[in-house]
Structure formats: structure tokens, C-alpha cells
Amino acid sequence: MASYNRVILVGNLTRDIELRHTPGGTAVTDAGIAVNDRRKNQAGEWVDETTFVDVTLWGRTAEVASEYLGKGSPILVEGRLKLDTWEAEGQKKSKLRVVCDRMQMLGSRGEGGASRSSSNSSSSGYTSEPGGSYDSPPGNREAQPTGGGAGYNDPDIPF
Image (cartoon, rainbow, N blue to C red):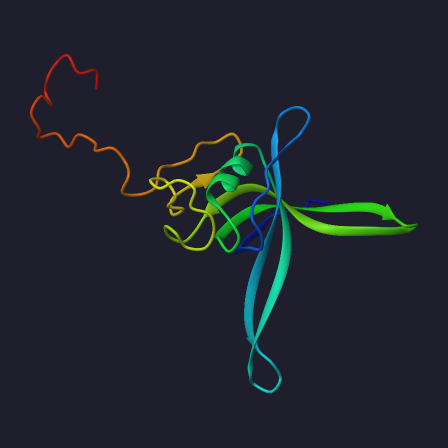
């Protein structure tokens, strides 16, 4: 039988990111995300419901999150559900969490959370995938030749 395990969440971080490293040197962090939902109850009144989800980020994704995000930062995570089980005081316990495969920072500069870098603290446009790259935010990209400038047809330019 086939199975499919994907989760996409958009919410706000519930605490600052605390980066750790495994004995092998891989960066890891456990983050909490608050996901809000609004619906009408039986009386027809709007009720807000918040779900708190634990998310584990690995590698470069964890490093970027710890550098640019803080409590209250809006974030999108995509990943898979994982069930953790353990025994405490003779009781078996379990908890679902999300293992993040892809993370995208949402919002704008200075919106909720840490702004540790003055020129690159804009979270809009940064994306992360395992082993992937991070795109520079829109508006901060280098200019590309358009074909009409001086030297554009220079035969020594290798493009």
C-alpha cells in the first residue's frame, strides 16, 4: 500500500532559535510554531484556535533560521511527520513533530523576531532546501546586462 507523509505549515515561531550541533558537527534546532485558525462556533461567534507544533530543522536550514529568525517571526515549513516515543517514570509517551525539509521566511524586514544583520535581515525571498542554496532577497540582486549598454558586444566577454 502506498503512503504519503507531507506537512505544510505557516505560523509564527513561539521562541527564539537555539542552534545545537551533533557530535558529527551537523547543525540542528528544535523550533516551536504557533498555527492560528479562525472558525465559527455553534453560536455563530468567531473563535480563534491556536495549534502549537514542534519542528526540527537540520543543517544549513537550522543555521539560517538561527541567524535570521526569532520569537514571533512568520515562517513556512514543509516536511514530514515523525512520531517520537520514549518512556518516562514507567509511562510510555509519544509526540508528533515535523522534520523540516524546506523552510521559507515570511514577512518583511524587522517584522517579529531577530534582525541580526542590518543589510540582510529581510526575510522575504529566502528559501532553504536540504543541500540547496539560499536566494538573495528581491531588490538586492546584481544588475544583469540587457543588451544595449556600452561594451555589451565586446568579443572578449565570455557570455
